[in-house]
Length: 382
Ligand SMILES: [Zn+2]
Image: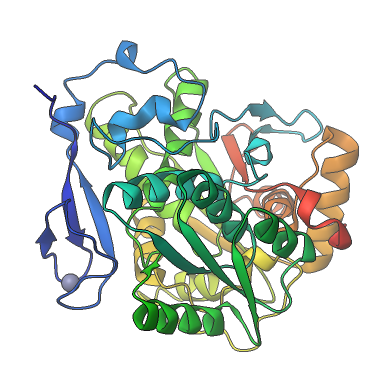
C-alpha cells in the first residue's frame, strides 16, 4: 500500500481553479494564470524532523515536494549546499553557497524537480527560455533522463553558459533582444512542436525545488529562522519557493517564525523594487534593461504579482545596487572569503552596506544571503 504524499494537486494563483496532479499542465487552462502545487501541511505535520531522509541532496526533503512516492527521482546531487558565516563582514551574516551545485547554480534544484515531475507525466521534449543558467541545468537533467531539451537564450548570454548547455546535449538558439523575446519564441515553439514549455513559472514544477533552500537553511541553523533572507530577484522563483516552504515550516511547528525578505535588483533593471516601493500590486515592464547581472535582467517577471505578495507578507524590503557596486563585491567576496560569485549573487553582498547604513536592518540581526551561482561561467565579468 502506498503512503499518502503531501502533494495533492495544482491550483491557479489567479482564479483558484484546482487540477489533479496527473494532468500535464503548464499555465492555468481556464484563465492563463500561474499554477502553484498544493502541498498539504496536515500530512507533513504527522512527520517529525527525525523522519528526514539521510540523502545528501535536496531530496532529503522529498516529502515537502510535489512528487509521488513511486516517482523515479532525476538527481545529480543538487542541494545540501553549505551555509557559511561571512567572517569578513561586521555583522551576523551567513551565505547559502549555491555555487556548489552540479552546474554551479541554484537552478539545478528547480530543474531536478521539474524533470522528475515531467518524466512521470510522460513528457519527452521540453523547451525553455533562459538567461543561461537554467539552460545549463535543464540540459543536464534532460540529458540524464533522456528528454529532448531546447533552450532559447538572448544573444548576449555568457558564452560559457551557451557552450555548457550544448555540451550537455541541448539545442541552443540565440535570440535577438531580451529574455522576454526569448520567452515569446519558447511559447511559439512549444505550441508548434507540441513540446512542454518549462520556462520560469510557465511550469508549476520549478519553485518548490528552490524552496528546499529554506528547509536547508532552517535545518542548518538548528531549526531557527534567520531574521532576514537577502535574495537577488530576477524571475523570483527562489523567493516565491522559499516563502512557501518557510510558511509550511511555521504551520507544522518546526520553526517559530518566518524571516523577512530583502529583494535585491540591479539599478539598471529593477521592476520589482520600483513596484514594491511605490506599493503597486503588479509590475510594469522595465524599458531598456541594462546590467552585468544577466540573471537579474528580467524586465517583467511573469510572477511579478506573486513575488510582490510574498515580499509584502514577509514585511520585506526591496532595493537596487549599481553594477559598480556589484563588481566591487565580486572582487571582495573572492579576496576576503574565497567565494567566486557571479554578478547576481554578488548583488546581495553589495546590498549590505545600504541595509546597515540606512538602518533598514540591525548589525545584530541574523542575515542569510543567497549566493545563487558561481562565477565560473561569468569570468569575463570579474
Ligand atoms: Zn486560472
